[in-house]
Image 1 (cartoon, one colour):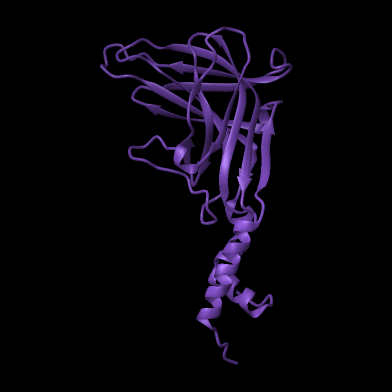
Image 2 (cartoon, rainbow, N blue to C red):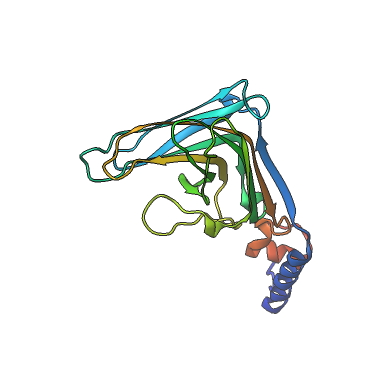
Length: 239
């Protein structure tokens, strides 16, 4: 049997899918943690020049108000090198994976956390995500200058263009249905001055939260020719 496929009708079907998506309300998905069990978090690092090391672990008391994750960034000395050393720690939440090919494209992200300066210098903070093995870092802010004080920071309506990878050149994650699954977490970073000495900074994080605003009306199958043809036929035929 030959299937007659009317491209003009298919064009109407695509337009109908796009119109339906634009009229559908956005959905929100919240990924969060305020307990920071060690089994739920893993840490990986990226460095510039001499770099350093990163340690992250749960502390049962002293958070806002109970447990929190403590982050220790140690920088190697850059004395005599003429350069600055940098270390970036990506702390990944095991329960924070989203697949835009299944759930729909991400329209924006809203990030919030409570941060604390415990000892040493301040740490650079922000939302981070990993996609296709590449870590992308969001807009940064600093832990509070005062010691032992919890400060809440919110960053609403973040888009893919506000994230970049460490490698040279602009690199943005893919929030569309063509994008690979995304692992969410946060980062903490420190740098020495040019030719400066090393040392360790100590900070804390609590009430980590990422709210995804997604267009659930655009699943991956509707964006394929097979999905469009199935809509045109009005059946669930093979794609």
